[in-house]
Length: 443
Image (tube, rainbow, N blue to C red; front, side, top):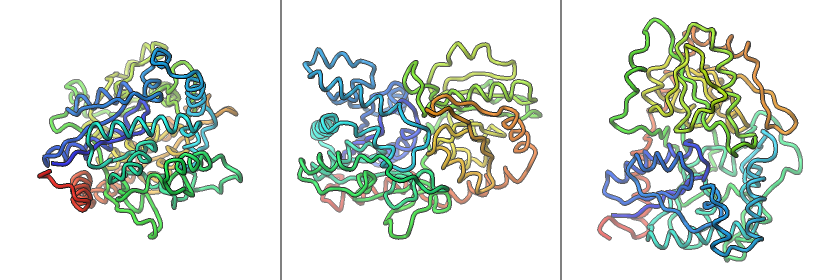
């Protein structure tokens, strides 16, 4: 038996987590021990439902993301740590919706050398206490540094845009000069640890084995990238099914699944990552359409400001994604990678309202394949306050529902995705890595 620690970017949404759980389940079925480390409420709920242990380090970032920052004072954390944490949250919620590449994104994570070291050292302690044989990472840079520091096998599961050789999140435009980068700060920390410097923070996500989700068509990288494509990795409990009221919806009226994801990422403060605009636009655009709307939010509460919902809307906090996509004629979502893959895998077309550039990248790939349409929100100068042309959204919903080629192309891409190994292949590759480093099931 081997022990794998799964590290995931610590945001309170289900995107990266739902890519990790199927691989964790495959490893568990093969007799290995798997633990997660996630601080946020909605992911913790899903981890517990899936039957996995969730570890929490004594770490400033993770304490903060549990909405208990003042515990740090009681633990004797210095005031400068709290100031650095404040900078971190501002960085994660600030800026515009145009995030050009992985370095530009990671400036929101690497805002302080002190916080970076604290998070790395927390992961070092957690990896040691769990006696992990290998780290399996889904965009958690601190865990990647800790794995290198401990000389543990590091296996990363990434989207193509995370790779340092990719064209970035906004591949359809030329980037402006002098974009912010965390590389100088990061290299200072790496040098202190005796680790080699990096040219890009994306180098952190190139592991002993680097697995790329999706296919070369949807997630292109140059041949020199040295990655292994594994196709879609999508989570659903084996026994999962949609609630009876959804299964019983009328067969002669289209079913539209609206999934905005997390509506607000920073409580009452607006950030460029928020998906509230998806919900608001969907309500306005679909209220008078002859469709049956299922609204879900991924274990997040529905704000009272959106109530009462229109008569053709029904709310369910969480639905199993693959089963819900199969029951739907159309998906409307925020462009998250998992949502795009879920729709394509089940052959369900989409109208996508991307809330920032990584999601716009995903949406444009779906549109390129003829499997959906895109409605871009407009933003104010901060990128935080968004609105959608609801007439355009209504028109594109009607177009996708009435044009068979969208469904046909989604089904074509679903067949293409099935050609790859997915979670079982990822688990096999993980076993190969730990065995090649001297860890075997008998240890």
